[in-house]
Length: 263
Picture 1 (cartoon, rainbow, N blue to C red):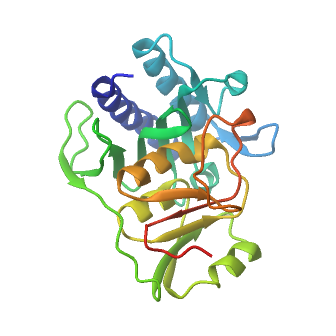
Picture 2 (picture 1 turned 90 degrees about the vertical axis):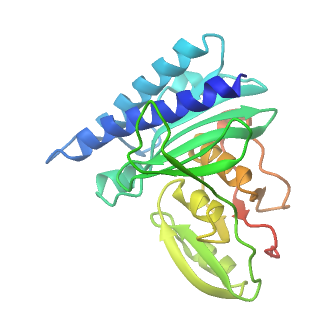
Picture 3 (picture 1 turned 135 degrees about the vertical axis):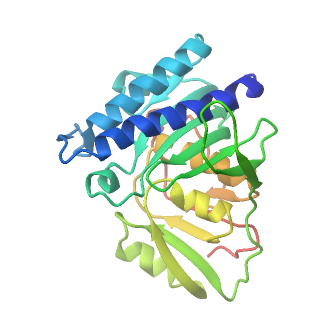
């Protein structure tokens, strides 16, 4: 994979998809349907998916592309592949809470090595550069030319006073019980893959997820976090979270800044 070609492309596609999503988000009403797994889907999911898929396929005609909204892609298996969640946080979108993201990543040998996370309602754009380091872009977010780039890095955590981020829509007692094992300075909540990005920027230091997720939910945020010096491990044995699993379903996991003593 040519990362010098990939990174500008996925950045632009994420911004273009964000525009499509915000057009629908700005309407007084929009249809919400239930998929086979009972999760919601909207016209924004489908429009963003079509745009991203077409752009990736045109640039990389031979690449394996796995995307949430195309069930037939979920049967694909490959050591390297592109993976897309065109609208992560559909519940946040439907409830107009703003914490939804566009996610595109490239996985190589089980590891998400490049990715982009764009939160269009919040105007926050995070991605890995061709060299693998992660940045947050600010300013006008011009589709054809990057603006101001800030290199992002995880914080150096104080194990006796951790900042924790947890899910807005999927918080449960098991998560609270796990967080209670740590000395917590403060907590925040966020939707979608933004939680990975908050750890990547040092706005949080620990993000545990004790609930069902799919690889397209996490790959881009995972790539951004890794590029900022963070780690994502399985909850059960603290081994690295790997991608390309059968069915693309994740185990429970923990995202964190090195220096956190995992429980």
